[in-house]
Image (cartoon, rainbow, N blue to C red; front, side, top):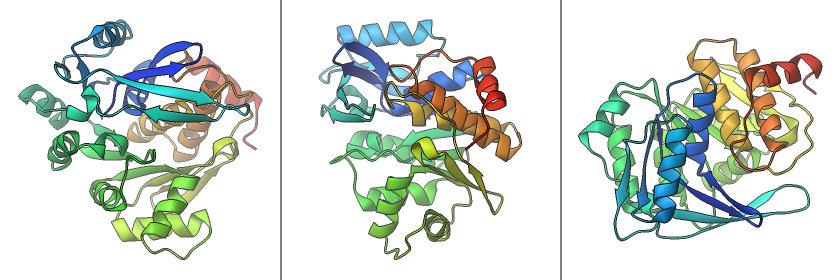
Length: 293
């Protein structure tokens, strides 16, 4: 179960569906997991189109509400010569005004995990809805997704304290750790710092093309990543998270799960947009043919 923004990523070449939680849900679906999305779209052409497309991609849309007065979210995406993306995120959008109903609450109560990010908490309405869900017993996965100026340290700390699993990129980890008083400089030291400060025993830090570090069952597990010719980085981290969580919650070997996630993220980065089609076979082929660096 994923909670948060569904929107259109507007590239210079056209628009593609996006939003980090939606990207995670769509990748979970392609990995054979049941996935649903809790969000809101506007009562407009963009909203109608995105609902139709999400249905065709196999996700249950009954927990995506259609609301008046706020437009479907649109994000302007700029990609530099290295494939790194920057975002201009319109506010307010329909996904800022997510409200719960009995159906969405029941979905979360019966889910294996609730995956959520920080961006959706920029507005009080969606933040309060999420906080209600975080009071449930579901396994909570927090995908840190820092987008200036749409976050504050107190909100991030609250979300981390409620999470069972936290995923950062390396820059996010260092920024948040420093804001909470860390004087450490290495990723490993700051992983331990955040783990102790928030009483969260499962954390993952991505390092772009250099792979990732996973804290799991008290041990640090490393993957050096896999080489990729980057088209753009949009959605690579979201697919990484989906692949990792799918593996870990199924009880797969943590080292293999981390390698699989890194390979999935690399393959996404090789194609434009957040949700390119990627098969298990392609991921397995990358792992088999390329040793993790």
